Length: 308
Image 1 (cartoon, rainbow, N blue to C red):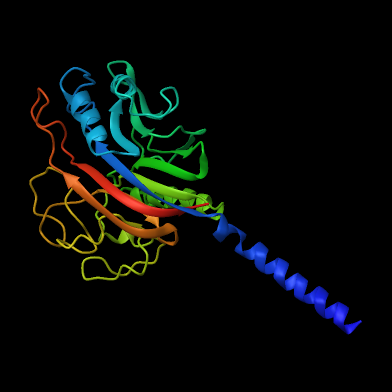
Image 2 (image 1 turned 90 degrees about the vertical axis):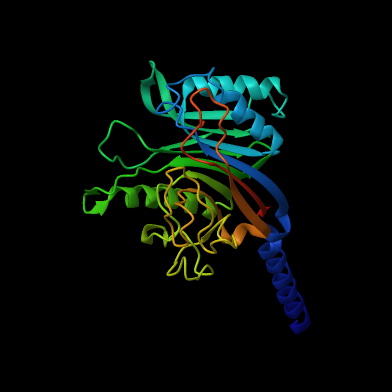
């Protein structure tokens, strides 16, 4: 009888071990290239699709081999033109299912919407669309995400956080929006998802309001006091470790290393990193008829992650 009980107990331990190991054994490793840009589609381009922005944008996406693309401040006319251009160039694997748009304002772009967009070389699943706490302006700040159809535990997200730090209901509204986005990401993480999070955060890496984003493993002179779970793909840049390279064209020497301000960021949860990661910001194209095609730089990144 003791032998039977011992065998049953050992079998139970063995089954439990297999069950506990299942999520890890189900995970695979993959490397992705990301491409992110705030295009100032209305402020600078006035919704134009013929002033050179579209070919500059789509040409860079293809030449950089992007798997995922995130765009801020995009007019719907421009979104449609980008979809048509990328489709014609054969960039997506499925020409009917690779792009999502989320409006922040409904009619500002000569009667059409203005907002954020995401694109994926691989087909996308149903989008997640969230409205962030209001900053009191006419613009609805949002978080737009979508999973990859063939890998539903892999999601790509884009957001554009308000530049306002007005205190609303006792807390700065930019902090409220950042916390709202982070809460959504943590819900995805609890579901076993790997999220690639990109956009214009209107916050520099060393700002206190990003301390609950960056993981404590990043503890350097340029970025300390962190309590979060994420790493930013440019936070190991040797030119300014913990901060990275400037992403705006305001001519400033801001940031802790005097290299210019950085507010366009790509985050990945640290526990999903499965290899190296890196990012860079590209010189702003000057091939648009208005001259510089944006007041932000394109940010590109490469990251190896584990995906359930």
